Length: 419
Image: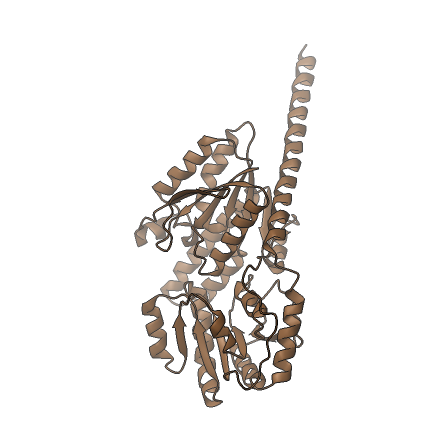
């Protein structure tokens, strides 16, 4: 199968959840036997721009700056504007002209800038490519929540962007022969929006290290850890809201709090000044030593969607406390393998209650590991995706044949009636 894969950017190194999911799916599809052309933006962290490597033909363009006014006046939502540049459109047009692709993959709404060109190409093709939309979130839900939490003029801007998100996401779903989502709730949302259309559940895999055993006892510092890349405004808002609520309580109880993950240096410095008792580490090459020095892991996110840091926690045997909405798609049971809470204050109180409860901490990390051990395999997920693409192709090919037969029969009947 020849597949044109449109993604936001080169996902290597994978420094956040979106890049991890894209990298895992691209490589899993390759391993399942698909030949790939990947079009996206280059990143400073990676040196490749055109590179053919192990079944993947990378075509990457430098990101081009856009003025704030152009972004505001564009019909595209902000999330899809980074790729909407002349050099990216050129790479797309070259790929579409080069060969008839079996499938064209939109890897998240960020690739939605290419929808009009792909739709035009399909209309002009004798054998149109199948279109696949790999949703990273139910973006309408995310956009609505972001707009509701914004204030002042920013709320107006976010509300306008939400309308753009809604329009683009609906167009992507309507155009796609196959739609996938990585969280069960997102699958249900898409199915409801698409009037019961079947949506394929496609969770991420886990390719990191697995800690075979661990015992949490008083040799481990009284510390909770939050592993998260702080490069997305909703994540920043959730982390700041939690810290504002929890910092004083945890400090009073002598509980350390550490935040590890990618963030702009200036933003990290702002956080350090605002929350001086919290240890903001920033980006690290290996997060495992930090996880081994914590008793609990935190997920204070206020939006749904699969959180890949949940898998890092589970397979490094860190018991998790999270907001109830924060970890859909993971087979964890409240009170037996995870603690779930309805507010940041309750989450902080849960940390205080659990931090010295070694029997419960160890029971939770063992139960969570066992529940996830045989799931989240990238190779299996890649085969699952490719099978569904092939199935969509067979169904669409059958539909095209039926339509052609019907049209030919209709023309013959019309001519016969005319005679």
